[in-house]
Length: 47
Image (cartoon, rainbow, N blue to C red; front, side):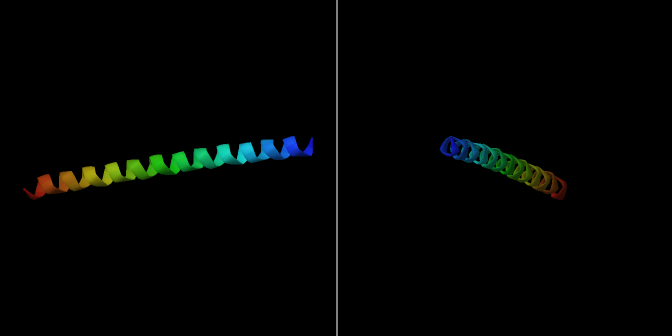
């Protein structure tokens, strides 16, 4: 009984970690996209 509870807690922690990692990755990618877009616009304005 205790063993199964421990396994379920570990599963929940792994799922939470996966969602947090996914969220961080998505935010990082969106930040990169915004940065590259702003650099692109900046270069166009300089031309």
